[in-house]
Length: 173
Image (cartoon, rainbow, N blue to C red; front, top):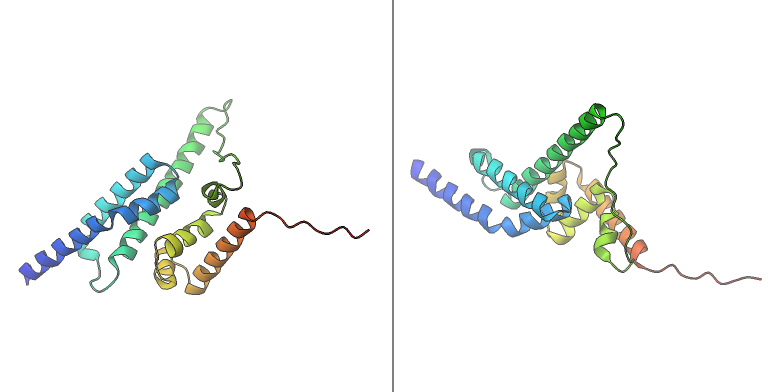
């Protein structure tokens, strides 16, 4: 029994290693910064390796890892918000402005993608880029499947509206 568990753990570690490129891809879309994304993946993998005993055999390793990565991302984002608030309170004469990406050419899909709300961006990455099923993506985000489908649909619609040039309305004089 102990030998089977060791083999299963080795297989699971191998599968985690094979999924690193997909984890990096999701992390880069979430973090929008290469070094932050690498740190995010590293922390998620460390947590996964520490929690191998909690993995439910027969479930998707990819969905499990994406859930861990997503949770780490949001945990770090909350921590950064608290840190910024604490810094703002420490230095009343300086203002901490939120970083807003500047507008670029409408043809730049990546820039337009970043304008989507985080929940829509996340849904599109999980279902579109990472090719998860709606069910897997919904489980990762902790929402109903219908909500995930709606988010993906809204994200696609908003991206299409941003990328497509507006149609000229005929003049009715």
